[in-house]
Image (cartoon, rainbow, N blue to C red; front, top):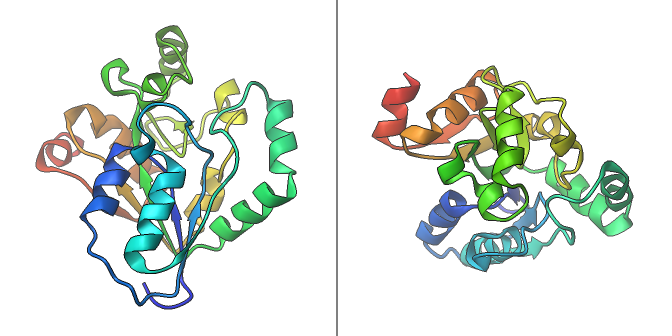
Length: 207
């Protein structure tokens, strides 16, 4: 990171742990931007707005919120929000990021962050799994080859799309544990992330 860098951030427990582990640096003139909508329920510490603020405070920069929910009711609402000026400007800034920090979600029922956040129930999760999904990044579901699925849920997400994410110079994915292995493998095969932060258990399973 250097002055005038743009740092985009998603949400989740793993992302929180990375942000929380960083040591204060009060001399970086950077912009931290929330690149997906907020969960709005559960633990606020792992939600996008709080993580953006924490990261900016730690690195001595400014933060930019994405004032929208992560997943909305239908594609019409999604498109209306994406066309809203403030949201559009925030996502344009996110697309220009020099570095992005993302969690890698799983479709395993016991660790599904979207289920835990109340966005989908177990029946919807089962349907998503049947469609071939192994995981998600920025709430976009992908298969074992890293291809984003043409499913209804992916068209209700308010946030950066995977193709735009791939164009960011350095995307750091954070996930650990054996149950995350398939999701990690899909993200790697799809070239969605450039750097992987994981643990030995997940790495061995991926290999």
